[in-house]
Length: 508
Image (cartoon, rainbow, N blue to C red; front, side, top):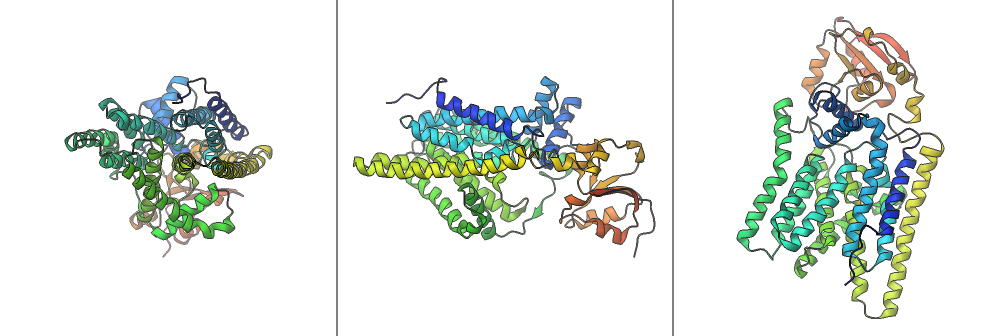
């Protein structure tokens, strides 16, 4: 038997160094990428460091997102006394290197005799355009994806030993995951499904373990949701029903898989077949492992998580409205899906007795994998040219377009005394207003929420900060407002304007 490598596993350490370098490279121009979500996390982290609370820039508790990631950032800020925007790039370098180390550690245990396989997988993970994008931004996925691997390690130990300490450890990781991202219920589902399928446990013991596992897993999530309901009246913030049918979401799932495979948009006609085959492949693999009583392998854990997570994203997008399925949403299953499918090649090769046939299949597989890695490198190099070499930065509020933006630069130095403190400030991008000026404002209402729209139009006086390039079709827009209200222009810029409504009679 080949023993797993120790810390002196140089291939893994080299991959960690490569990953660390790549995140440094992609954040070298303007620092860590900042999106609207990032500003929510950052403001809550600042609130924790200053006041011991987790309030957003609007002075209300963070409810649209779970609490652990902003708490994590807040604790680092308390210890380091450095702002999350400033330490975000280095933090993500460390997290990505940790992800690669954890991946190498796991592969040393499910493929200890195939170092070439491990090398190829580590390079594919390190060069993954989807993961490099995630770890270039201040996003909770940077922590969540690492938690998925920690769960796989702990739950595999439990399946091997059925020891209570490993069950509790896995459940605790799942519990933390659930308050890192709500989608972590898929970690809970992965463990629960494998507990149900485990035929080596007596029924009475299985029921007890399922109960213990379930209670621990949902403990933090339930507490978070109860707190949200108490503070805001909703458990996860206001949510709209989906307008995207299942088949369309399955197609979007497939387009992300096409992107990961290096296919072009002109080949998206393959999206539905690829998505269907991938999900059915996970189902077939899980059924095969159940039949063979091989549920306790790392490969099977990866397959099960990929199936549960993939179906969850597709189904939740069908019933609840949020951003369209994209690489960011599906990023947690990149590594597990890669392992799930490539590990079958290793099993297949082991079952082939003829040396020549095995050599031919191995050569073809290696060439396909090298082609896949080459395509990843090509995409990464294009991104390097766009974001680093051309001095643009990661798209978001720190990129070159915002650094050269007249409106943003004005907001950075704005005299807050121009606003009456007793009058509400509305905007189409409240996170941008806070990020550039530190001013708290309110988002103009969504068209879907009619009562909120009615309340907005009933205001006797308000300010309006409007960004021309951030218009959201789901919100009422400036033209809608000007049809009803007579707005007084206070400041005008090419990229936006500041208005005031002073209580004139509403237009009929």
